[in-house]
Amino acid sequence: MKPQAVIFDLDGVITDTAHLHFVAWRTVAAEAGIVIDEHFNDGLKGISRMASLERILRHGGKEAEFDQAAREAVAARKNAIYVDALSQLTPESVLPGIPALLAELKAQGVKIGLASVSLNAPAILRALGLQTHFDFCADAGKLRRSKPDPEIFLAACAGLNVTPAQCIGVEDAQAGIEAINASGMLSVGIGKGLRQADLLLESTVELTWSRLQHFWNQQQREHAPSH
Ligand code: B16
Ligand code: MG
Image: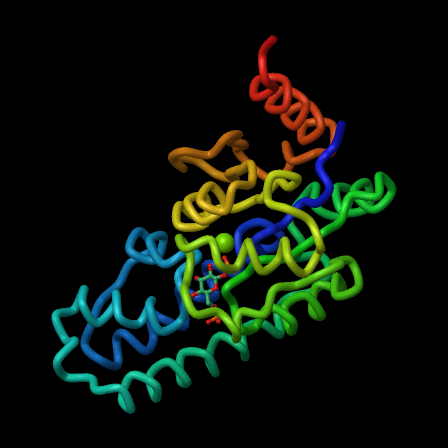
């Protein structure tokens, strides 16, 4: 037995751009007189650009000072700084274990999907040299509801022509784990302190095909109807 598809989050699973997001947010937050640290930034993982800005303004008690037009200007400036920093990414920036896992999934005939809320996902995949490795990438620009809503994972399943029950989702953010669980897929969390992941791994080094296959078989046995 094996899953029909594995659907990956991007930032924090395929590559780690959290620090680049942090540096860009810290710059625009400082311009607005708001101080954020790395710990605060952890809570922005998997959260969309505008929702991240909203959290930063709330953190600084400045929500009332920024109307929609002002927010869009700050978000655009943050994105320009971030996109500039993305030029640092190369195929070397792919997290350890991921190239081997993608190759093994392909060899096994398991479909590969992407469920990132980043509007920069296509550019990031190109910079990493991975744009041809995914069978379907859900379009973050078409999302109506952000993670923890399951919408993006369901869109990835639909694009791959599989049902959630046939899939594994991989995430590094709490909101993402909740989105996977709500979609009906099995969830794999990467990193420490994630709650409710069906399988929690410390890093992508442990994210191997044999680990996933073992996990899949174990889950199918546990949930098989008893006679
Ligand atoms: P962008 P993921 C998320 O990517 C990041 O974790 C989050 O920090 C970021 O705000 C969000 O993408 C939006 O990114 O500004 O590039 O559209 O984890 O869903 O791959
Ligand atoms: Mg992520």
